[in-house]
Length: 449
Image (cartoon, rainbow, N blue to C red; front, side):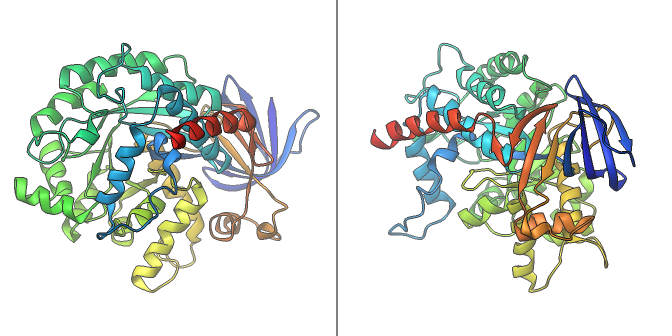
């Protein structure tokens, strides 16, 4: 099949009259400056699909349930208690239904691949399922139904705090030994084997949840795939890390784990100037989730200084409190504006489009973090997003102004192709009705439990 666009964002920039021929899920041929041929599907604007580097799909079901002020100072740690109570109610069917809705919403807003930071492994009592990869298979099933590209990141989680502290009762569904986790990794590889261009990495949850020895033992299980870890999300985490080791979390990872281009440090919110520069120069990706970080009150990532040092970043939806690719990029830039009381903070230089620079950086960094190739190029996966040219915010726009108006002025996604299959038409996923109905049934049962 062939798609023709009035304009498309290719690696070399915005190109008019672009014809993409798709075969076996990939872009087999790119023609530029040509007219549409008979039988071509015609659209106005094409951009590459973005990677969502960090998702906890099951948390989509608790969106909005932690917005009541408690008797004490509310923060990440009080939010976490709400999360623990919510996940105790989830069956495997609920996990699949919730993940499917989250993935539908990702595709509808321009994400075409998700890095699923998957740490819900066991039954509500904390016992392994007869099939240790039961819930990994549910994530794979949700990806299969919705068509989203999946980078599965099984999470190793063993402790409640630095230095090997025993796990808390609320963490019982997460906990594994190194041997048990090796078995889970093997079964998880099988779970994704039949998915289109799926891949697998590994996610030591955080330095709170693994010891140095365990980290050293589990990293080889990635077999060269991506390595993701939460790092320096909250100030208390930094304080506890210093008390444990004398080093801050990012500092410790750079010194002891030799984090490099395979790694994604998720959040990295609380870093010193020296850590910011070192992380940038390491080649690792910072996995930024601005909407969740704002919702949890985590703090603001030092994006301007990080990018000035050559750092790479990707964006993620984390808690899935709200799923929208453009809004994540907008929130990232707006946090910088509010912090520095200035505008267009993350454009690389004078005269550059902020939207374009944000998009390009998230596209490249996100693909790197998930072990993929980025962009609309021959041989790449046909992961394509078309924007609604008739949206009021796109009237008269061309070139980079299109991205500025999508990210900052609310222009809408029209269609999405994922691995060559059209999954979204007129902003709505082809399986939206069935996925929504199953999710509603699951949520009614959960909320009434």
